[in-house]
Image (cartoon, rainbow, N blue to C red; front, side):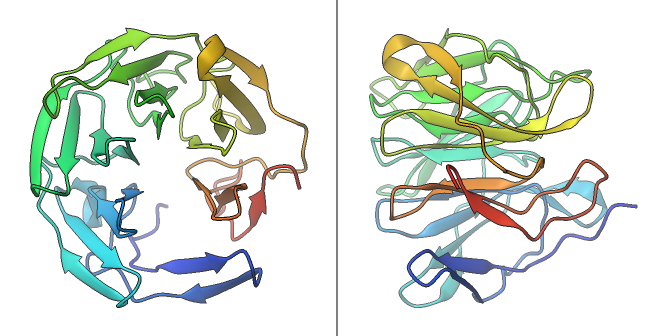
Length: 255
């Protein structure tokens, strides 16, 4: 039985190797996306409220004050969004049908089309060259291996998607982050057999190629989070195990 959405916010400090609690999310949700702006504010975007209802809610956390505020709503409800910040400072939010782009300077959302694959909940990360990579996700019946890169246009959402090299292994419910080396690390997820995996797939934008990440003792997980810390390491946290049990473990790649 699925659990109820939660409002818990937990903060990891790599210097102290310690977790602490932050003020609760005003609107309890699951399957939401998160991204930071250039000022360090954290956006909690979309997801599902009680009963699995998609929401257009956006709430913004300011670490310096510890306050949550209401942000401009998404153009439409998104139940399983993916989000990232581009090198242009804008926040890109994607689901299977719509790309929504938020400009923190103007406070406005604009919309564009999703990649041709139509995969839901892909890993979405910003590349150093300004493109936005969407990789994997669910095509409705299995995990997708498709990967596309979005090149922003002169306006907020008038760019274009182009096919890039496929993932070696299609995954859904995976997480990803761009490392300090400019490569993208796609971690874990579920493969096309529905099995939870603990592997890491690494994308090198300059060569348009994928490779296997270094072997590690990373726990197989899906539905987790990933982010690059201030120390340059890629961290993964939470999610569920192959049996569907929630995980409280976290790891840095390479450990």
